[in-house]
Image (cartoon, rainbow, N blue to C red; front, side):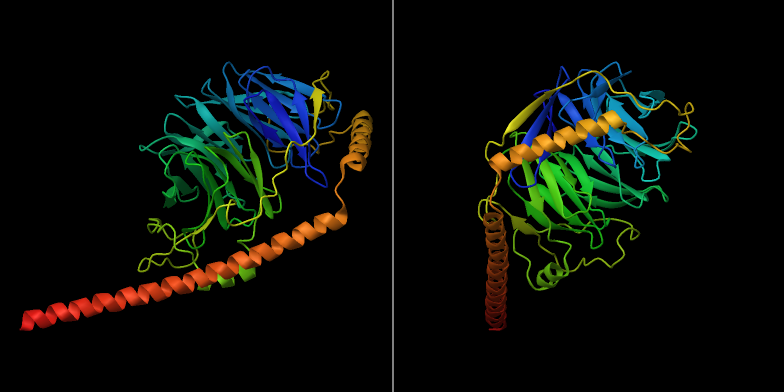
Length: 435
């Protein structure tokens, strides 16, 4: 699902023929969107000061949550799907009950616009970042701020927990990405690999990799175990505003100011790729060694030799499989849906089990599936053609890696030749001095 300044949500069906479902309801730009962990609900935040909960079906059922007094920057589900957290330009963070669809409580301590707020994996903590240049950690049980990380160089645009909940990553307006250990209250890693502000980050489900999106038009993949940049990805024609890994980490999607959504397939966490990377690193940008406390990375850092990253540009390196002009089905918001009202007021500690789908919802979802199936029949791609294209892409990947290895060997040869010439010049210079 994607959100946009055009005031619409788009839910994309990626199997077989790509298709988009446009959800209409917000009256101003939609700033954030997220599926619930079980995929049964969709939450959106908007500059119209509302949060909406949608049932992602062709009937467009939604419920409006009102409480903020200014534009809402982000909305996010808790990992059990029972709660929402929203961050707003009214300097507040609000926690909502999904089942009762009302405000539970608000958190106030930021002194400027709050740009992002996220739940920890266990739901007990909330991390938030603001234009007051602070990243704050909140305890949802006693509703207080328990820690604050200050960054005097700039403010954070985005913040999120790693999958284990021990660290938080912040994306800085001062071109930096920082990882903080919330147990030690210390900075672990500090990367300055972008040439402009960083807008979004996303942890790989393994917790070993972090992908970043920046106004400089690139995505970068960081290896957190080795503490270095391993990939630079080009593709967007302008600032990259958001990025997110899929649930399993086998894909990730990026959205940019160029009104494009790009879907990428990962290969950096595979064994074969790591073996290739040991022998081949394409010469592009040289990264400064990260300065950090050796807690998060579990392997020693190589400060003596400088490692390079791999740069990928779809224009040259991979086949462009962009879907052109997918069919769009417009879905207008209908009356709000209801959920069982059996939640006791307030506490996040012991939420009851969620039973969100009623029989009417199941019916509407079945109707949606049947409608989607009918469109598939009309616009589907032949499976044999799809398999052939996948095989071609795989072969191109192999070819790309082969070329890269040859490139590396050529570079090593050039380096050795340069070293020989430098040594020869030194010997000649010493000989002249002795004369």
